Amino acid sequence: MLPEAGNTVSFVEPPFQLGWRYSRTGRTRTHNMAAQRLDNYLRTHRKRSGLSQAELAFLLGCQSGTKVSRYERQARIPTLETALACSAVFGISPEELFAGRCQKLQSKIKSRARILAKKLSQVKPDRSTARKLEIVRALAGLSDRPVKP
Image (cartoon, rainbow, N blue to C red; front, side, top):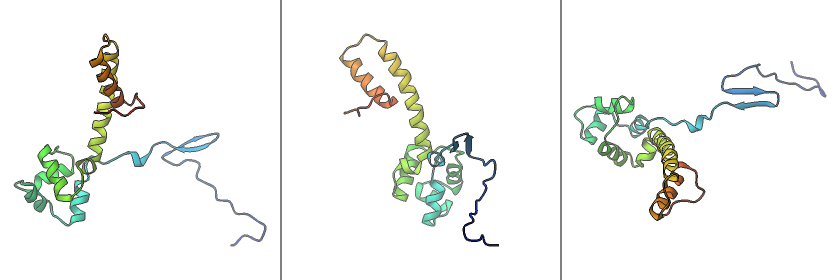
């Protein structure tokens, strides 16, 4: 049945939906899905390239596809050599290929940098300490200025 001219149709939203926070002023997302990254995108790129696990294992210098399966399921962390080899095979940077792992490491480094910045700020200041503090504060996100090497 269509509404007659002049009448408006309003669609009622369900009273509660997962992933939303409700308040008197409206609703907002409770989490940002775009911010969460997979630990690695090995399987995605392997499938996209049409390689089997055994074929990728061969290219990486592994004995069987079992290791590749373990890397894809995050049951095993690849060595630096393996990560760089995967990067070369798929033609993308290790940061992109292992985006979730990089994101977690960056978060841990930022947390440790805050602790180190606090420790360094309590030490008698000198030229060396000032430079370290500048670098550590930039890592911790406590500085607006980028650090120059």
